[in-house]
Length: 181
View 1 (cartoon, rainbow, N blue to C red):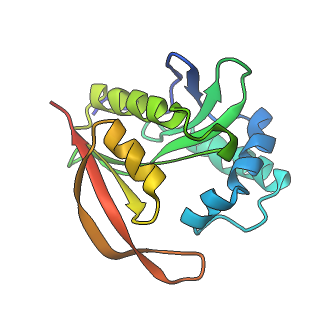
View 2: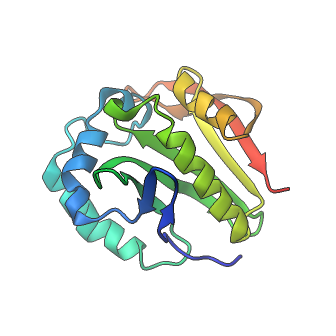
């Protein structure tokens, strides 16, 4: 594995880069999106700008020092605005596997931004040595499964009672992956 950490990746319309202090307001807006919160149970219901600043300063700053940490802001080239986030949620260097998570601001959905960024991240992860990239989505989250199919991932099955909702009930999740060829 040739870990690089969260390096800047450029696509046709986007820049994928580390989350910065100037992104705090956009991060707060993103994490307060009801659809994002519906699928990310660990996010506080009222995610303030101060919470975002604290997270960027006290958690991300330290994590970005590690060469095996990957967490990108999805930023529009046209106006330098953070509109989403894509991260390696977990990884296993021995198995050369990474698990991706992503979300995008409601105003920017259905424009192909997340598919564009996921493809770029998958390509980067393959270059540095990962051989399997996977993602999971609540069976009700059809937008994420649409992205998975669009970027070339294959459906592998449904995991029953895989993760928790905000109300602590369990939900089934679809598992998708793409293998380095």
